[in-house]
Amino acid sequence: MDKNDIQNGRTALGLEFGSTRIKAVLIDGNFHTLAAGEHNWENRFENGLWTYSLDEVWRGARSCYAALKKDVLAKYGVVLRKIGAVGISAMMHGYLAFDKDGGLLTPFRTWRNNNAEPAARELTALFGYNIPARWSIAHLYQAIKDGEPRVGDIDFLTTLAGYAHWQLTGEKAVGIGDASGMFPIGAGTREYDGRRAALFEAAAGKYGFGRGLADLFPRVLSAGRPAGALTEEGARLLDPSGELQAGIPFCPPEGDAGTGMAATNSVRRGTGNVSAGTSVFGMAVLDREPSKAYPEIDIVATPSGAPVAMAHCNNCTSEINAWVGLFEEYNELFGFAAGKDELYGKLFSAAQEGEPDCGGLLVYNYLSGENITGIDEGRPLFLRTTESAFTLKNFMRAQLYSAFATLKIGFDILRGNEKIKMGHINAHGGIFKTTGAAQRFLAAALDTPVTVSETAGGGGAWGMALLAAYMTGGNGMELEDYLDEKVFKNAEAETVMPDPRDVAGFERFMSNYKRGLSVVKQAVTALKRGRG
View 1 (cartoon, rainbow, N blue to C red):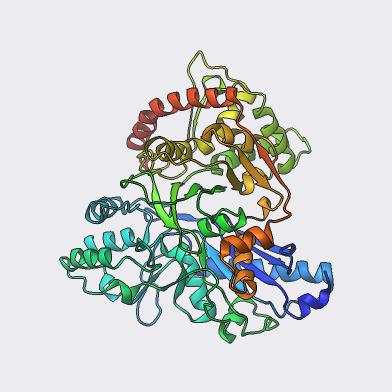
View 2 (spheres, rainbow, N blue to C red):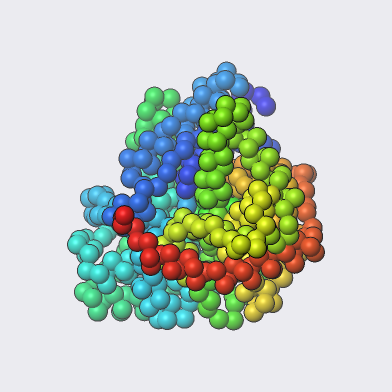
């Protein structure tokens, strides 16, 4: 890489606000990662809701960008001032409502909250279209139904990606993938569904809410469209040093589902992908919409607007991380020198030696509620019978099975009821950085070959950088062709076929898992938050 390319802005930057990490990835014209920065953060459970403060958003963004600048300087001896294009991504859905003066009306409500479940059920029946509780429209309708103070003062409602983009560029816009987690997209329109918007407005009007969705929501943009430029104020917000230059073009901000599709080259119809981190979601790009609405399946959109069936699960790696942290404490107690990377490697390797059905052990990784299985609140559980084979190998295998168990329930609906078939699944996310186990067990869960590319560790921030590069360098190509012919043509990847013994073992695990869900529900009832 010629450092002149960095100095002259022949680059693209993706900045993604994930659930536990904010990450920035700078790529060159060949889509290789030049530098990266990150900042760890955690959501908080306050007043019954999961949230992040907006101050944390910008502290984290500045910390992440500063780490990126430091990486660029260390590697290339260049101060990062110019960037060719930027894209902002974040966890999808949620509720960020502002008044006409730009003041936040309530703390940010993330995708992790299930409080809008009553509104979601009512809207699903009204629309004939599944509306999950985490969608922005469900949060809005629940606030209206509950008569929340100042709900009538809402002037602008957006997602986290849309908010960050607005603050940096002054533009109230979102990419179509992110928009599809706010409100249904009309078939073939690439806009919010007008008929369903009218239905919503009539229902909300009965509670005295008189604002139209077109006035409240950000405008919808497909991949490749320009979405504004970095303002002077935005440049100082991200880089208080004053070194970052204003005027950098921004592509439409996207949700983490859209960046996952881009990062795994899964935007063409008939492809599918799994993105695994704090949450896990699997997506199948459809030739047609499902025959009916399923509460377990969202219909969202690719960054270019094609319909996608998504099984979204609120929980994936958090419980595994908690147990690895416990093992790390054990090592420290006895003075063993082993870092987390080594721990993950050893424990995941041990899992591959466990019994195909985990020896009868059961793990429920529900740090938060889970819509697909009807669990209202998080109650992580480890269960076994007196006959279970309680070994470390089986325990770790059960932890990894649990990471994909709820996802499997959603995919089984697509395959069983809708006869949707995929030749293979492209996977990415932190859980696949430790090679072998997670990829093998996902293949078993879905009974489908799973491909992990060399770029899988780049994750959503890298996928967002690709979308930024596409906006400035697509030259009229369709996004599907751009990714195929420009980005992934020579990419190295490894595909794992499902092992029949693993598939059969996962089915036995799931049979027990489904029966044990009643125990989790009882734990939610018996152990309420805040009680001693």
